Length: 434
Image (cartoon, rainbow, N blue to C red):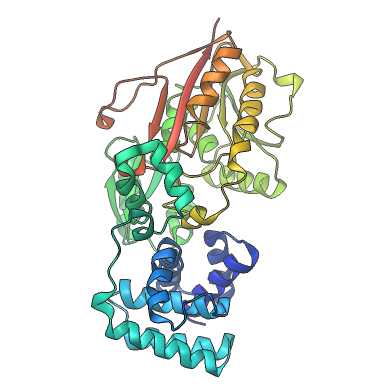
């Protein structure tokens, strides 16, 4: 199996089963036994097609006689994959992209489809210089119009920069485990593995890595010397101001990054209760905590909206990183942009229920962190403000922000990929009155 075949399998799974691209890629890369280089290419192809799907279809509509509407879905998948390589990847010989696409057409469709694929992609080669992105930012950066309008309501004139950031390469940021290794040992191990490391400009113990390949294959990963986490998510835990010995509750913990950060801030003392409603995610939490040597983490199968009497007013800090629209992580999950927006309007009600329930666990004088990975105010400030109006026992508390962010301290903060180089992320810090 090669990278293009793996990429096509993942794209088909995304279309047929509604699978997420990252999950489908992981499954098919493992199935096909791809080595690091081919795995990286398969990932680049799938993400590239997802990031540019509407633009690719726009070009294909002009290349396919009669437009793309009449094509078999798998033929359109193959054409998108081939055109992406021709138009965006200079290091892949165009002839290789065309020949592989034709072979895929024969295997997944029929000889007639293979002939059409050959003709369309060879036309694309001849017209390559004429395939230019349109001025409309929605089409240029492949965002559906409904989503574009929704995001425009949040960022205004900065919309083109936001949409462009969703298609830009995402730096791999990892958090060093200070309980497992010194900075010097960490950097030496990275050098031995041939990985370049750059200190993150404002997130303590965070490093931006290049030349990694598969993170999980690094020897220092198995040793528990780091975990992957965006600086914005790390800031949500830093904002809580945790100290050793505290009792912390992470009500929606999976995949575990915030629980891991909390345990490290506690110096692996006290207790971090990490909750999720999915048993397989509890298993992931357990494995992650064990790898990092974080014995103070106690995973628990628990619905964040269901009350647990034994926890009432018993926690020094509660982190409620609630289910959300995920519109702040489109750059990492490009297929989010194509998901239906119909259900998003109901999210604030769920978020409010989880936040109100989480608040019951905060002791007098304790801290409550509300966070999401979206930039929509209706899921962020609106939920937090409504909570404050209904819960007089809590008051907002300013978050001490890193100087590099260049913003005044305040209790509610939104980070944006086009402004801060992080995921789109909202953090609100509240404190229960003594």
